[in-house]
Image (cartoon, rainbow over all chains, first blue to last red; front, side):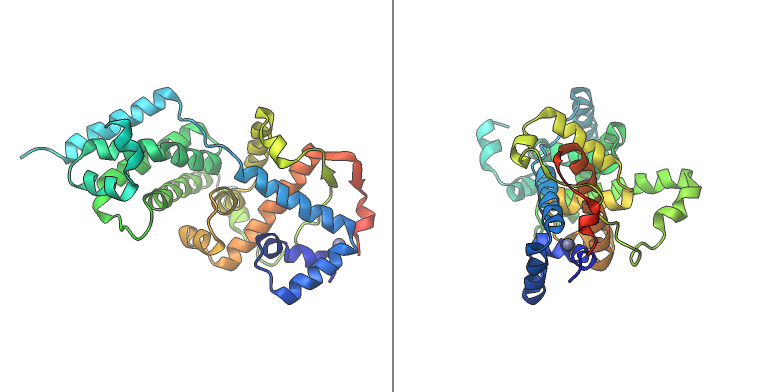
Length: 81
Length: 212
Ligand SMILES: [Zn+2]
């Protein structure tokens, strides 16, 4: 396996869905190739950082507007008999 | 609605109550999911105003089509699908105005060369400690904003929202192979960007070492 072949399998490797025989080759390459090791580690950290991202708060003015629009729509669609 | 009821009732029950005409139940559903919907839209669109539009459209549409919601999926899964489609519509509209880039942006990218990593270095800090800094949030959002729309949308669904490749393909109407290629490009581009920001220059690996 060459560095370029390793790149192609990167998704499957970090997601843990790589075929075991390919995984073995992948790890054999990494053991002898520091740059690939670091790239894989960088990718894992990149994903972790985005996964750890907190949700955004709604701007207060927008939140009010949203809830008012929903109440309005509710009234329109739920008119009493 | 009392806080007790809010905390204890699951989404499925609230949906049934809302269908039966209970507005408070619907409002509780909105309160639970409005931040997630807004964040998804904001990350996909990189624009606060557009994210607000998508959020409002999503909940208005949910209100109108509540009876179409099938309970085998979670309520948020349903909202996410509505929000994603609304966001894609905005992306397409933007591209429509920018006709020159349209073809370039949708040209097949499945078989071309995968960009080789350029800046390779161990990071100076762990993701956990980086994640605690406010500065990091701004930097990673900026990096996300530099991706092509088609790569960013896939990355947000797969790696931020945590959908599987198959679910991502399903929501976007793409093949799994297509999702995988776009995801790889997104991940490599973000790695490149973030490693330039967070990598330790003293531990940079020279590119020549990485040519075999
Ligand atoms: Zn290598």
